[in-house]
Image (tube, rainbow, N blue to C red):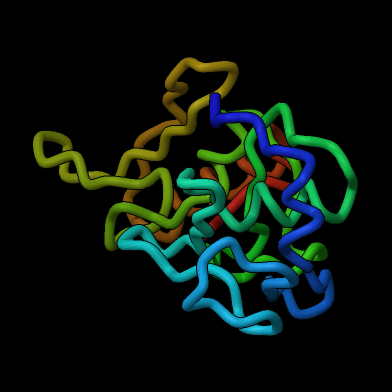
Length: 162
């Protein structure tokens, strides 16, 4: 679990929920000017803001500054753009839901891979923490359709097809 966000951060950083931008109100370092943008994009593509010597993820700070509560679960980026911290692009998610909202890892599509021995395409999905076999299909498109139907049914708003 990430470290708790200190309440006094509100005295130092402003958040615009429409743009997702953070601005220093009262910087803690002399080289930073009030009104300047806070944070930088880290190697994983997330906005990271250092405050009182600790790094905080922008999406978690956005949730805290907008709603006034430290998120107790994951904060998911709906459009998968890790630097897009507009409040309309953020939602609370369980770790499983956060994983459902990821990109395909194969060229055939999410939940689909080629089975060499049968020379067919396999569709599978994770449901309630267990890998579920959806079937063997003659084409990648048919396997992709099976995955998409199952994802829509079991993952709802967190289903991702691409």
